[in-house]
Structure formats: C-alpha cells, structure tokens
Length: 273
Image (cartoon, rainbow, N blue to C red; front, side, top):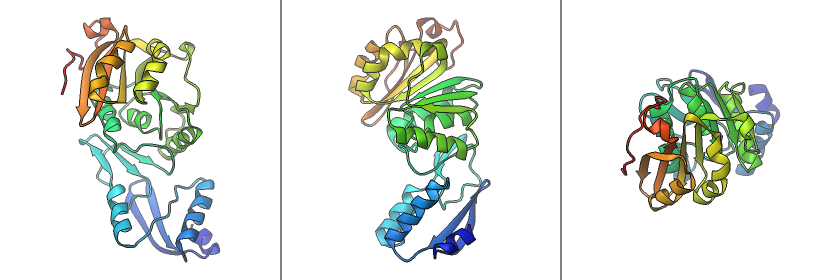
C-alpha cells in the first residue's frame, strides 16, 4: 500500500491497527479534490478507502460519526476505516463505503435489538431493503446460518456484497435486486426496514415468506402507523412492539407460534413501550 500510494504522490503518515483484523493506512495528499479522486480509485480496486479532512468542525464531526456503535456487550457495528480502537468489542460488523445504514438510525437500531433478543442460532434470514447489509450481517454475527438480502437500489446490493466480503461472510450472504419467490423460502426470520408504503405494497408477497414457526420484524414506520401496518400483514399476529421517539418496529408471527406450539422465543402479548 505504501508503494501504491507513493506512485500517486500520496505520503503515508501512519499505519495503525484499530481492530484485530484490520490495518488502517493514513496518507496525505495535496488537496481535497485529489483526496476524493484517489479514494474513488482505491475503492474501484476493492479497498475500503475514504477521504477525510482535518479542519476544525468537519474533523470533529468525522470523529463523532465514525465511533463504533455498540448494542450491549454482544454486538458492535463500525466503519472499516474508523480510527477508534475496537479491539475490546465483541462480534464487530464492519461496513465499507457506499450503501445506506450503519445501525445509527433509530429504525435500524430497533430491528438490531430484536435480532439480539431473538436469534438463537442456525436461522435462515431474509433482509428486505438491505441498504448496506447491516441487518443481515448482524444476524450472521449472532449465529444465523444464511442470509438473502434484497434492495431496489443497485448501489445497496453492491455495497451489501462488498460488506459481506469485508466481514468474511460472502459465502453465507446472497444479495440481489429481486425479492425471493416462495420456492426459495420460507425464512425463519424476515426483517424489513423499508417504511409503511413499501410494507403495505409488499405484504401479500412478504407474509408467505415467513416460516410457520418464524417471525417477521418491520420498521421504518411511526408509532401511529403500527396498527394499520399490522392489519395489512394478517394472518400474521403482532407479538412485540418497540418504539424510539418518532420510530417504531413491529414483530409478527403466525398465530400458532404466538401460543407456543413452535417455541418462538420471547413472544407474548403485544404491548406498547
């Protein structure tokens, strides 16, 4: 990397190890435009390269934005290029450039919290509206066996594939623009952080993809929209509701699972929080 950067007149100023599996190379270039151009060239070559500035407020914002996000003691999400130390964090999911979502938004956090409480190991997962693949990758870190990730944006699908490779999970995660058909399912876990209108539109295709003893978690909706959204997802039954400010997440399952016939963990009477 030193030699490669030297060819383009970039000077390596530091090489660090913020995590147990990652080296971070910091280099200086002549101007901001050159930094962005060089980062794009390196990304095209498959590297998680970004450009950052060191002037005042933008530098402070960068440091805040790149801090690892921890979910209890069992899971953390962090940008691959973060300079923050993460050697003591458990089950780190690293994200490269591109895509949408890093676990910071309340709608995403709500679904990650559900994964933390419900993944028991070996599940098949559908991540609908994958963005960056963060939900599917978190599920794999927690013990799920395989993930199918879909999104309507090519950028999101490509970012998800890159992030799976970055985390050594490319054999467990398949990403595409197409929603799987019933022949590819059903799935033990379905997560959809796509908003009310998309959930309502996709409901007839989404419900059959939930296994008889599986569960569906949807987010990107507001608390007042929960009852309406749950109605479109019948015959699935609401079994959990989480809220965080203006955002909410619902967990739904087949009726038999609610009554314990399939042993679905942590299911009970729906209750607002």
